[in-house]
Length: 371
Ligand SMILES: [Fe+2]
Image 1: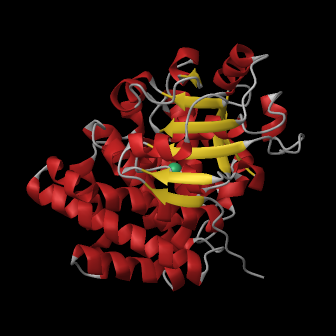
Image 2: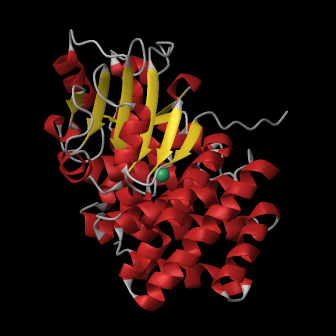
């Protein structure tokens, strides 16, 4: 039986000020926001809220250690609502603080603790990539297991997702490109997932259209052209979040996680590394069904024949973001076997959504080709 769910109430606000006023952000709130976000968008707003900047607790992608550090700092403080304004890292971490029990964190992620919601959760993205505001998933690097892991449970859904295009304005080019490519990959992986439905594919296709059209404009007019498309990029990220929240992501994410965890490569960039090799291998193994529909749709958007769709996509994406071969991130050939082992043992949740089954030999081959 198929099912489809969109859980949060979705709001579109013109500014952070409008959001803070509408939601009466302040006393009783636990507010996750970076210092930059606080300085640029929250001056004089949200007075009385308990504020957390996750960068006080570690750098880079979210880890179990960061969550433990924040929990220790908050010990004894009461809050009635969790509000997070930030990128995927901040949203994913904040989701855990709306639960009754989040420690020990490794036991929560290995599903030895049943997640239960404690308070209302409001998520406001400042990037156009993760779609985390729409999903019931939290992704953390578990240092004890040397990989990223996802926890998906309905207790992690936001009660409210608030989209504010002005928050994307100050994003550096690299962060913007990496997050928008991440959203494109969410749309593609959910489209070809065996769990895709007519509902999820509708959201995937619309997300791809907005992102590719935005990228084409940026390629033609320069990166500043993105300003005209900010609302569409933000909507595309949320649409792709709805799609993958229901149909799942797959091998691109699974293969990127060991790279992200071992070499601290940002999530969207690590995904960009894996995207084309994974889809070229799918196509080599079986070219039909939703994979063929995806290629036809991308060929239409990219105005090229189906046979050249991956090279045309690569050409377009490389204007938006620079990525490297694995060796460029300091990955040695000796590490590849460990990466592949982690994918096959710790990322079964994602690998189950592959368009065609990828074996250990397939994963070894992709990593080898990329080194
Ligand atoms: Fe992602």
